[in-house]
Amino acid sequence: MSLPPLKMATELQSSLRCSCCCILMVLSMAFLLLPSNGIMAAAPLKFLVVGDWGRKGLFNQSQVAAQMGKIAQQLHIDFIISTGDNFYEDGLNGTDDPSFEQSFSAIYSASSLQTPWHLVLGNHDYRGDTLSQLDSALKRRDSRWNCYRTSTLRQNLPLSCKGARCSFLEFFFIDTTPFVDLYWTYAKHQYDWRGILPRERYLKKQLKALNNALKVSKATWKIVVGHHPIRSIGTHDDTAELKQQLLPILEANKVDLYVNGHAHCLQDFKSKTSSMHFLTSGGGSKAWGGVSSNANKDGLKFFYPGQGFMSMQITTMFVNAVFYDIDGNSLYSLNLSKS
Image (cartoon, rainbow, N blue to C red; front, side, top):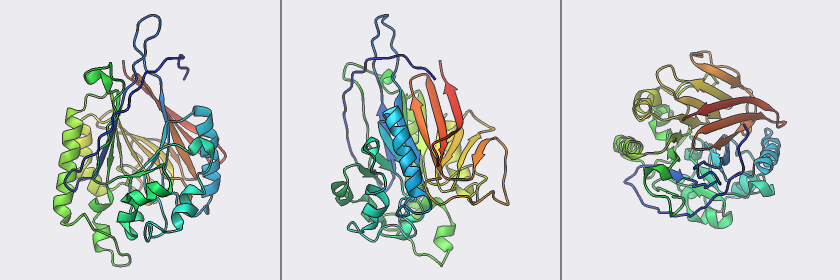
């Protein structure tokens, strides 16, 4: 996709607030461009998405990171999104855990990757000291790190732009692990549920907060990011709890994209009941698990069982998503548009 050169005026206004046990982060971004013809247009927001990566460079994590660095340099990305499972097998054991350096700082070391990371928690992160990943001590160790549970982050650009037209894109980051019944009944692993209990109240408040935020959003593009898939044919297939509780909210509020990890593969599904796409970027390290025995291929547009990551470029009118493999080859491209 060819985009014209544009001038961009920006102002960053950030606010953080707690929201009663709800894990939600919203990034609202807008670009006001004034070409010579006076027509407003938008420069692309560019970012990478990777998930299921934290293995101290093993299982080809380092090779994926190297290709991320190359694509990030080509695109001049603005930030990176992690779809969770940031540290295997059992999260971090504290804010001074050397795994943070071994699996994050030392791996994603390319100069082009020295940009903000926005992260959600995965089920493996809950098997360690979950609160350590949310602690500001990690940001002091590596300033790129931004992992939230009860915070909302808004960015409004620019000051001269007023009203709903200023937000062409919003991200809503949610916490999916507490939804999954298996983690509450599976005795083999222990999960750190501090800040979650009582569970039903936590889930109810999170869903209510997400629904309210989506309802008031005037953004052209709405993207929800969580760890677990709603649609998947990988070894981790559809998450029944999310299909029952989360999906109706996304469809009612006309969410454009649901982006997730957990399934160690790359996928694109098109919803059969709405215009929404379900994008999986969970190939940050260990992969090649194959296809689920319960695979439901309805709406499947693309599936790759190996390692890789995704880039996205978004303007007021277009979305371009590209999946890359471990060698940096472009495997699949999704293009969406709005007038």
